Length: 92
Image (cartoon, rainbow, N blue to C red; front, side, top):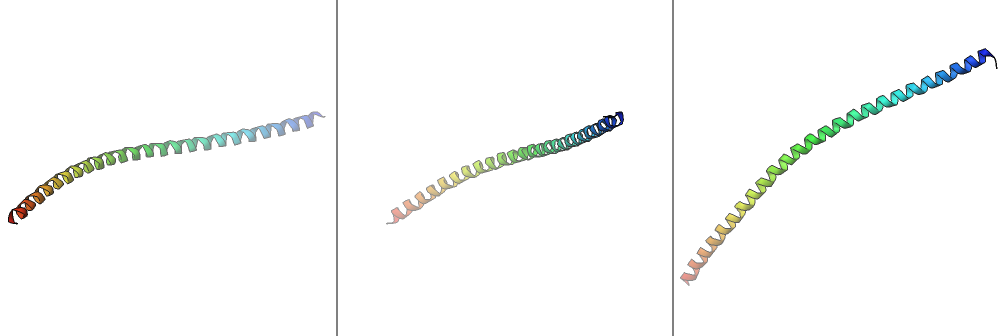
């Protein structure tokens, strides 16, 4: 092998190594962009979770108030029915 062919071979190997390095750098940049995108999505999901948790808490409190109101109305209806029944029983 002549000096020139050894140099040519070394230059080709260097070029291949540099191409490989460029490809690795690009893959790393892409991975970093994906990681940033995932971090952004995770943050957005955290914000959504917080908002949904607050909405759920509000709806749970509303549901409890409605249940209490429903029980109160049922008691009033029972009292009214009992009163009407006693009036009807007294008229017979």
